[in-house]
Image (cartoon, rainbow, N blue to C red; front, side, top):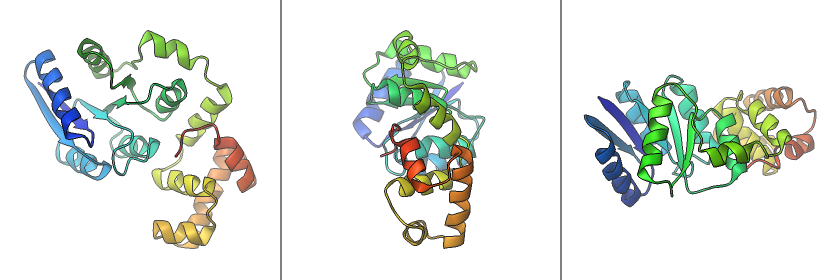
Length: 211
C-alpha cells in the first residue's frame, strides 16, 4: 500500500496530480495539504506516509523553509519537491537542503512515477538533465547551502531577516522571541557560515534564492 501526501496550495493541480498518481499506482492512498501548517498536521497524524510531494511556495513554506521544517520534524519521511521553477540553482539548493528528489511541474506522469519509486527505495532522484546542470552551478553557492542546511528552521528565519536588513529588535518582534534569543541564533549563523559581520552574511547568501 502506497500513501502519498500531496502538499500544494492549488486545488486544480492537486486534483490533476491525484488523477495521474491513481492511474500509476495500485492500492494507493493520497492525502492532501495546502500549507506548511496543514502539511505538518497531516504528517503528525499519519506516520506511515511513503513520500511527501512538496511545493516550495505554498503558504508558510517560504521557499526552502518548508523543506527544512519537514525534514527536521520528520527526518525519516522522503520528500520529493515538485516545483514550477526549472532553475539549476534552485534544484542544487533544494538537494543541498535535504530533498530526496526534484521534478518540475511540467514533468510527464511516467517521470513522476519513476522519481517516486526511486525515493521510496532510498535513492536520490534527479533527471539526467538536472543532474548535469547542477554540476555547473557555482560551487560556492552549493557550499553555503550545505552549511545552511545545518541551521534550525528558526535560525533560517533569522538569517532571512538579517539578509533583509532588519535589526535584532525588529527580528525579535517579528518572530515573537526575545532579543537574547535572536543574538544566540545570530551567533550560531556566524559560526556555521564562518563569518564575523552581518555584511559577510549578506555576501555569503546573496547567490541563494531565499526570497
